[in-house]
Length: 134
Image (cartoon, rainbow, N blue to C red; front, side):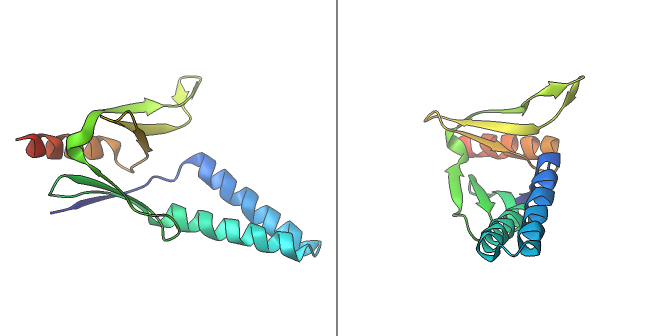
């Protein structure tokens, strides 16, 4: 059975959402319609990405990264995964501002994912990797 993990909404995304909304309302208030339309499109794309980002681990050994209707589906075989580790981008007073799961592939490419349950995601990914290598 395929396992689907939803993306966590980080604090920075909430702040960006507030900023985009404020800029849209401000541009409408001062009647900059063309700029308001651009902010509206950007806000729509951003909300779509926040709501619909999922990471799917399939039973046939693939990782599917879906980031909404306006982005294309990325697909990677789990047999190409070299390492999976939890990381944080920056720490302030001992607290991580951004936490993510870094997946490294054989071809040197990386994916930084933010699933809601990182431990469970890593556990299932490692289990599926072992099943694929047998």
